[in-house]
Length: 459
Image (cartoon, rainbow, N blue to C red; front, side):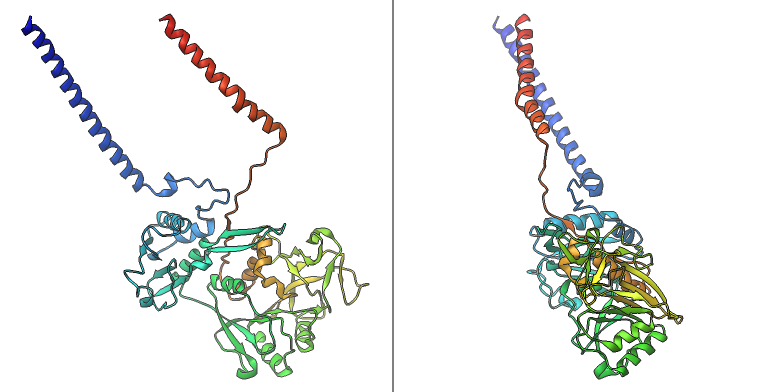
C-alpha cells in the first residue's frame, strides 16, 4: 500500500516537474519572441509604427519637406546640442521623421557638457543648449531653440503658439546642400522702416543673404546684388540716387519698393510713374466688408492678381494695414501686373470722393529684365499680422523675392498650432451619449452578468 501511494506521488511529482519545465520553456520562448518583435518594430521607420493623431499633424512632414529630403544626393547630419534625455520631445520626434524619411539624413544628440567646443568648431560661438546644427559638406547652419516656436494672435485676437521647427530645419537643409546664396541689399540712410525679427527670419529661411547698403556713402550698387529692398523711407532719395537705381534696373536689376502714404517722396514717386505705377496720397479705407478685417476698414484683405509671384499662395489672404493705393499709368513701356487689388469701394483719406478700385501691390517689368515689386504699406512685414492670415504675407513677400532673385521655388511652411481645441457637442448629442454611457452600457453589463450566473447554476 505504501509503495502504491509512493508511486502515485512520484508520478504526480514527475508530471508537475514536467509541467513546470514546459511552462518555463514556453515563458522563455514568449520572452524571446517579445524581444525579437520589439527589435523588429524598432527597426521599422517610425512613420509606419507611430501615427500622428495631432490635429495639426505636428509630427508629419509637409510635402515641401518630404520632396526636398527625398531628392537629397548628399548626406546631411543634424546635431542636437542637448543633454541626453533632456531634448525637446516635439523636436526629437520631428527629427526622427526626417531621418526615417531619407537614408541621407542622420541626427544625433551631442551633449555640450561633454563637448563644449563642438559648435565652435563649425564657427558658431553663439550656440546655446537646445540648438540644432545642420551640416553637409563644407556648409552648415545653426538653428537656435528660440526659433522653434512662434507666438501670436488669431483672427479673434486670442493668443496662439505654433511649432515652427519644420520650417527652420527644412530651410537649413536646403541651405547646406545649395551652392548659390543670392545677396539681397537693404537700402539704408533715409529713415527706412525697420524689418522686424520675423521678417529677417523669413528672408533667411529662403536662403537669401541680407546685407545693408547706403547709397549716400557708396554711391553705387554692388555687382552681386540680385535684388534691393527699399522699405518705406521717411526722407526722399536724391535725384542722383534715383539715377543710380534707374541705371541698376535698366541693366536687369530688381527692386522691392515699399511706400507709405503719409511720407512725401516725389523722386521715388516719379520713378514709379516711369514704371507705370501712379501713387495715391494717404491711406485707403475699404467700404466692402469682405475686403477688410471685421470692424477695421483700414486693415485691408485684397484680391490676388495672377503672376508667378502669387502662384504659390494656395488660397491664403494678404493683410496690409494702413495701405497706400495706386493706379496703373498706361503711358509706359513697362509691363505692369497687378498683384493685390481692392474692391471698387476703396477710398483714399486724401480724397473722400475718390472711391474706386486701387492696387496695393504690383510688379512692373522693363524690356531689359529689370523689375520693381511695389507694395503700398510696410505693415506687410509685420510678423503678428502674418499669423492672422496663416503666413500669407510672408508667402507673398518670399514669392516676390525668390522670383526677383531667380530662385526656382519658395520655401514657406506654416507653423503648426499647439493649441488644444475643445470638443463642442450639440445638446442632443450630449443627451444621447450620456444615456449610452450612464444607462445602456451599465444595463448591458448587468444583463451579461445575470445570463452568465444563470447558465452556471443550470450546470
